[in-house]
Length: 215
Image (cartoon, rainbow, N blue to C red; front, side):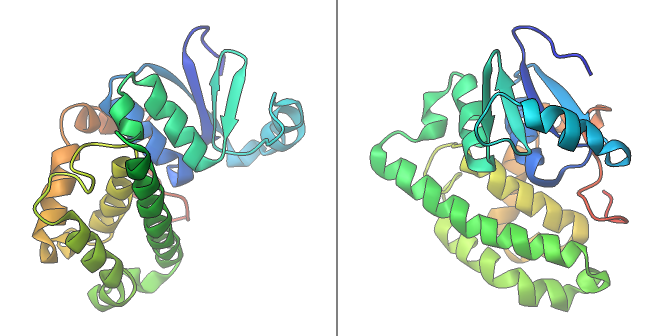
């Protein structure tokens, strides 16, 4: 896929996986970006052609390319995508807030690992399995959110990572989030407008990753 000059290029495999959070963030803020996806049927394109020549000391997927600049590693890619929206508050209004954002990201990343493992297990459809594995994380997220619209009181880049995880859990079981009504409303708050429209586009991957897990 040819890259468009002057346009961000976000690159990953042709699945949601670790890149979907960046896609949600960019779509939400109406940022035009090139959606480059590698095929699992031709892994050589990434491993043998592009990765060895990528203009960074840390070649990895996903990556975001802005002119000659290449940023890799999910937290850094997320923050750069947030920076490009022009909304500086996404990165935190204070030094303490940026620390709280990192704290929340690390916590939610542990949940992401749980969800990834559940998605590879046929038992994930059982409500009791979701309760056991993901429930404790959601209880803490619910307590942290409280009555606020967003955990920090305003929208930041980490909200899109939280949203990604809640979205995956809803796809696993549409009723699961109902136990935490503030998280359900939080998901609905972000999942509107541009996000809903982006879901309908061909460039929006529908498969999370493991075979058979589709939404």
